[in-house]
Length: 403
Ligand SMILES: Cc1cc2nc3c(=O)[nH]c(=O)nc-3n(C[C@H](O)[C@H](O)[C@H](O)COP(=O)(O)OP(=O)(O)OC[C@H]3O[C@@H](n4cnc5c(N)ncnc54)[C@H](O)[C@@H]3O)c2cc1C
Image (cartoon, rainbow, N blue to C red):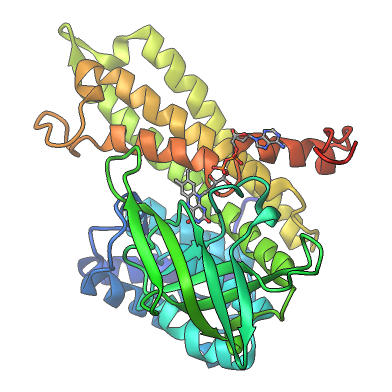
């Protein structure tokens, strides 16, 4: 891959840099990253920044203008330039999350015109938050076994059942959920993908405490919840296909080399600044050995992303390579957090309100959060099965109930 910018890309890079210099004062201190750690409605400053980024063409680039986006020609290298320049300037990029990164591309692919017009604009501007109702108490890795069902009543469906681990359900006004609507169809054919408000009568949300100590996910119970049939995305009984399109976007959202590099840079600063027994942490060979090992892995993540870019430029589909980013990236982030905690010694294991560390207890919280991401969006074991079987052509593991 030629790493030099083409002439038009060089001009675009300079334009992004100019924007970042000119609008520095308007950037919020919180990023989408901090909202993931502690889910809460976006502040006005964050929403204004998001609106500015969309207006200037630095967020929602590939969303058509008719739905409130930039309507730019797909140019994966320009997207990369934006990501890298914002990262280098330490400025928050466009928002991402279950609505913007997962539902919006799904609606673009499978939604009706009315659904696109109603939901995409407010979602990309950060005005509506969404939660994802997939997992159920007995259906996680084997998602297609889900039991929450809907019975028909005229133009509506009446939903009964429950979801679990629903991130942000306690603050999100909207949900996209998988519901069994065709009781006589096979496991995969009987599911519909529906979008509806969370304040409908019959929806009960009970927050669950996560390992981070914050209530970031929930149990959601549905008792006779009435939803119009027009709220189905992608057609009745096609929910499995639509859900998989959303899941592919989720995997792409959960980790990237810049996110790992950010952690690595913070650890570098920590090692160069903090002391233990009167000696700089950077002089501790055990910590430095771990640091250098992880630095090499962050670099290999970046090179893997370059490979994905090259493939995309050549029009090749990403195949399972994005899944590798999720699998490797989430584990890598967790190991980076662990190094920071070990470097901080006994302070590292403390949580909130520690005066001696710049960002209160942040490493413990990230450690717990990143540990959760190794499970969320499909566990590491399931990702490994898929990569081995579909990517490397290894023998399939025996499936229960198939002899
Ligand atoms: C932080 C976080 C946020 C989440 N947010 C959401 C959300 O917003 N919406 C939502 O719907 N869900 C969410 N989830 C749920 C997540 O998708 C599930 O936890 C995940 O799919 C695993 O399902 P499970 O918990 O039922 O575990 P199980 O499927 O019961 O798995 C238990 C263990 O068995 C292993 N296992 C299962 N099957 C196999 C197999 N065939 N081969 C090898 N090992 C196997 C798994 O890897 C795992 O270690 C979230 C989870 C976390 C941790």
